Length: 253
Length: 244
Image (cartoon, rainbow over all chains, first blue to last red; front, side, top):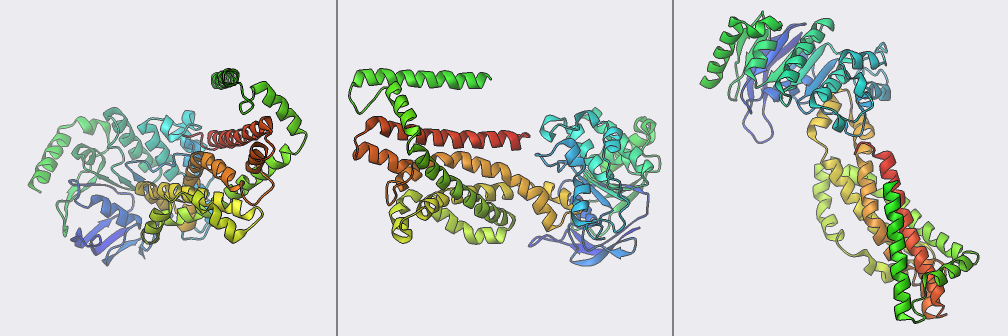
């Protein structure tokens, strides 16, 4: 589904982050991208989102070269990206309003007009209906991230990209949202790529883990983790062993 | 409610101080509040409303003009690093110049009528709004812009859904900061080349007719204009920026 083919990417006047790097993601997979700060994992996500472009090589999604953000790709960032002047409901409606603004043009919005315009079921599903009329500054971090998730999922994406989405949340909120995202991923047949610096998060969420080290990155380690995602797994021996080996791999660099 | 009561009590204290000062000074150049109030009622049926309207019109026209030009310019500069670095030295030099010193110059160039008065207030408001809107637009977090872009927003939608609403509080803050200066400069501008406006009214009653109560009526009217504009901005900010 997603083919990253020998891309090279560098920010202006900096040394390359990716050099001739390739990667392949199949539809419906759950990937965690793990690496230390500054290794380029967020950049990789922005490349998949069509917000940055490689200097050479190509990224294709469903066979189409990525030249701008796809309407079917959802992106969720650590700092939520909510409009401070809009209520939870208005924030959740933002993507729909943008689609309405352009109409079904195929570039900013999908060309067929079958998207639903009702955010209420999503606010209910994410448990933020009670705060629908409040502003982002009035709600908790977890509720803000739920708002960002509702805003993205109401657009019915097929690919969900998340950049450190839970790292500013406390542990119980974080674990609750991790489980919720995995449920939503199954319910909505999403392909999920989550970027994290947390070993535990990668080990719990990623059925496949891409381990990045220091740039320039040519090849990355790929770890299969098929048991990931269930609550019992979080307390299993296998999980602890995986965390330990991921930690050792990160320390080796 | 508490705030209104506080404001009312403060007003009473100010009037009381004025009354006491009038007794102490005991000269025609400081009439008592009641004398001024009677003069106010008399003038309000005479030509005071026309002078008030002239001044109000000049402030409102220049405000509308300043918002209509400075807000878009600020948004464009705030979005474009290149344009901003091109213009920011110019703005840096022009912004701190006290625009009131241009009053005689503008009068020489534009002559009689409303245009020079409107222009001079416009200049003050323009720079204030320009700088605040520009900084507000430039300070929008890249994460916010990225995530809105990921929802499908191109340049036009970013403008409509992010930059435009983000500039509103900056415009109101700019107005709040500069409305006092604007009225002060209006007074100076109305001293010259006009026979309408509260500035003229204060000046002519004070230094030509020696009608001190009427001069105080003018001062009172100009104060009301300032307070009215300020609380108008305050009201708009509360209505439009509930999220703050």
